[in-house]
Image (tube, rainbow over all chains, first blue to last red; front, side, top):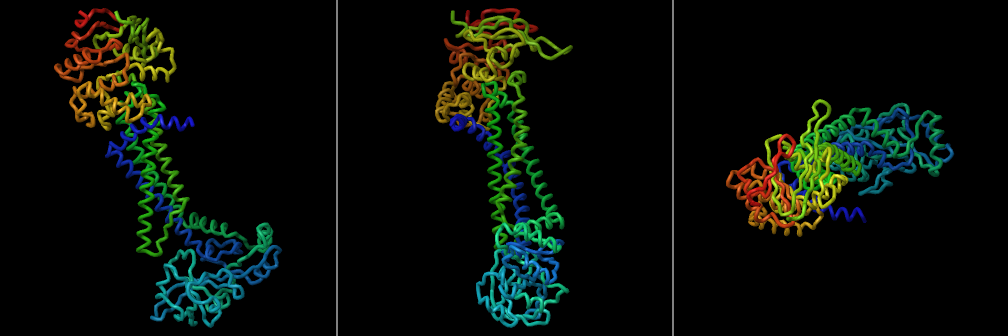
Length: 387
Length: 233
């Protein structure tokens, strides 16, 4: 209640601050541009990273398994290290495992009808359960068992297979393949190549394999309480069990720190922050310096220090939020436009991106106003007379 | 004789520490009354501005008291002194210190806004005072579009808009040509000085002495003479 009353009382003073700010059009525009540009860069860079990480974890999210058994040396789903079949049997025998199925994940070259080759990702689903199968938009799932049957995912990479339809034939490692269903998945892969689904047995039959063939084991635990026990038992076999979220985190961590990609993007984000801070901080500080004597005159007239602080904080907050809104809007517009032209454009704006950029903008505003507030609080009304 | 507006008793002010310590004002005692236009004159460095700052609640004296209606203003805390200045003192600075990013009427309304008065009400009141100083038709221009004399009048309107009983003029003619300066002070004498107001003016300009009721001469931090001005005569 007291705060509300104070806010009403302060309305006139804040309005003075607002008018001082927006009526200095040159500086206000410079401040807005600085923050908008900075927010735009920060969100653009982080959303690109978020989009790429979503794509990097596409197989994990699309499959939807609760637990993944994998070789501990695996850093990302695309580079699996196959496990011997006995691991599958051993996992199935662990108490608390409701069921466990193999998943094949590999890359292959397909030869299209016009003789061109196209790299594809092939996922081989457990023959019995087809666990992790995608939703179909055309065709019947049972047709995957038909001779040479493959499902193709209709995503941004789909046209690279010349927009196949049910019945379209291709060659895969000198074997005939036939499209028997068109599928859709929540996320497409990172590497810009189409995805085919088939059965596990056909995948290992058609695609040259190493000695071991099980890329991953997908596990359904009896309940959440069983997970620690399953993890411990699998660890004794020399393998690792990760939940879906843990696996996504591991992949993200590897891209971030294992490839240098994340670090570079973080450096870009930091540069955006510094650019925003230097433009906005300097402009805001010079804006306050320009009005310093007037602030001193206000103090002489009877303004209290805290009222001048409110004016400065209000000015910097107004600029920060306006710049933030413009930056987010600009970035979202650009991403939407880019996605109209580039179907596999990776950027996605997440709440984390927005929160990160907001935090950085508030830091910029706080640092800018901190130095300004210090100057304003230090000026003595007597200096106004003396000058 | 009018009532006493300000009573200064044994006012002194030192600046600096150690060997650089200097005394700017030395044991000054005097009174200023309502309906009085009191000039403080003297050469540069004589302590006029320091004295004015202590009288108006801006600079804390090293010794002595300033009483306004029997209240020693320097016994108040910082916020209450700020309130004292806001409620009872109007300032016209030498360089006016008007915000060029605000309109003239908004500049005049600032003391009312600082008193937490409603915005629209403050603007109406400010406009009334702009009309008093003859600038009603310039209300929405920024001060930078006005002449020096007009800016001075805006500063006067800002100083009197909250009806203070003490007005402080710091070198009111320093930035104006002789004719405009005289007109401004004449205007202040005729329209601004009232039964319930005391005007303290620091000036070098002997061309405006004729408008003073009393003139205090300062030298080397002391009051060395007091004489009635032409206006009183």
